[in-house]
Amino acid sequence: MKRKEAFYTLDLQDTKIAYAHKSNKELKEAARLFRLMNSPGLVGLGSSIGLSAIKLNLPFAESIIKKTIFRQFVGGVNLQDCQKTIDHLYKNKSMTILDYGAESKSEEADLDYVRDETINAIRFAGLNKSVPAVSTKITGLVRNEILEKLNVDALLDTAEQAELDKLAQRLNAICEEAYNQNVSIFIDAEESWIQEAMDMLVDEMMSLYNKDKITVWNTFQLYRRDKLDFLKKSHEKAQSKGYLLGAKLVRGAYMDKEAERAKELDYPNPIHDSKEDSDADFDAAVKYCVDHYLTIASCCASHNANSNLFQAKLIEQNGIDKKHPNLNFCQLYGMSDNITFNLAKAGFNVAKYLPYGPVKEVIPYLIRRAKENSSVTGDMSRELAFVVNEMSRRGM
Image (tube, rainbow, N blue to C red; front, side, top):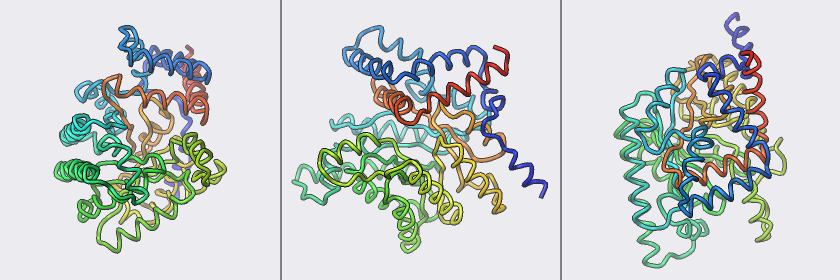
């Protein structure tokens, strides 16, 4: 009983623990950046100018980005660059999930490069006990047009079928290496008009590589109306076909794009009407995964404090080992340190999702971070408040 009473004092807003890994200088830099990002108008203008400057190879652009938003949200330009951050996180009880920041590629050489870089990351992770997983996007491995056609079961011509075959080869090479290195591979979810095609591909990889351990993980976007049911059906399918399910749970990152496309093409928006509905489905998915943790490896990949606390309480209430490898938490590097490091301090499996890559590759990711979090979720306001509170606590 005493253990449970102590547990429920877990405070995900404890800034002393959240920022113990940051110096006063680093806190000031974070506060400055979050103040800038707290203005949607400024973010929109800065994103447009920054993207244009990078495309034009203006000499000052990369330097400015590297010293500001890149430093806050990205691990480095390459794997070796990330090692210092990986070690620093591990020292503070957080693991790392690596993600090469490439997406929406089309040229064959680029697609092969993303495959090779992902395999390099898996091998790098295999040598780092603090890197249990690598994340990848299927849109970095094949043209979007192929996925769109596959999504609606359209007939592919000979050249398109060859592209699909190459995607299967690339994806298989990645998953096979992950299996051999004993590293998990997280496959990101993306837009609804290509997601069914990707789900099919990921299911095939899980059936090959998740029979005796969980190597391949699909991502479930719970802001979609259909994904809670899809999670349950995916589990039932895995059970019936003799493999284990890997499930990364997210709310979703394409809300505006989904709504705009649904309106433009006049079909029902696949996203829930309200945040409350998304929250309810997310927490129901968390509970389902915890209830079935012996046959589902799950990751609560969320910046919502309530959902993280909900999973933590379920683990504790059910008497499950906090370090069970099938129950995990993850937040983006540079954000939600209040969640990550307080959960880590309490003894749970927690990781930071750490993108890396050249500035020109990660700029779309950085713009998405800035735009979404300033205009939609209000994450920057929350991040700023936590940093300011800790600065005040330190008497800064």
